[in-house]
Length: 270
Ligand code: UDP
Image (cartoon, rainbow, N blue to C red; front, side, top):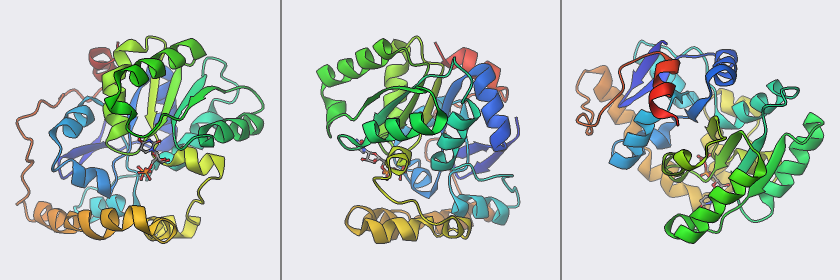
């Protein structure tokens, strides 16, 4: 599989269609690198480690997409988690082996998303939902409860909207205990969007790389620091990469070299 290296993430250069087909054939863990992830990948070795173990890393962001062009190795398609998730359930509308559990968002929001998606698809494709309380990751009882809920739901897919890096870390902490789950989708705010709890930016804004501005104006208190402070060094780091001056701070952490998703899955999935 063709990959594009942006800072210390190697992004799979796939089309949406290819990803949908690969997932149905092999299953696997999907993460969606964006500017915020790439910044976190410079600081958080645990996040970097789980990123290395994911099976598919697809470009979530127009800015990352433009950076790939600037670096001379263009990614063929932006596949953001919030667009991919509806494509995934629509593609699998008649595939009865796909049963999805939604994990994340605020109380009641995942339930609302379930109702809307099931009505849209015309069957119970979302078989269970749970919105864990904030701070659940430090509460072992709560973590066990989540595993039990998912295992009892009969789901074969989990879509996790807990924000990064929580959702990615949760996947790798939990996946050995979820024997029936073949597909893990880290989808960020997609559950909020599906429920209609938060509005998605207009398409033209995403297309010109301004989705972050729309989200910032909608939730300034939560997002100002992320977009206006934390993520700014991204541009400097990309320039460094262009000049061959960028160094992966976690170069010593193992990265699977095999390009085939099958191999990556057989090694890392239960
Ligand atoms: N969230 C959650 N539990 C947590 C932290 C976050 O359910 O402990 C949810 C939050 O309600 C939001 C989602 O995680 O619905 C994703 O948020 P964010 O905007 O950070 O995701 P992004 O799409 O930017 O990765």
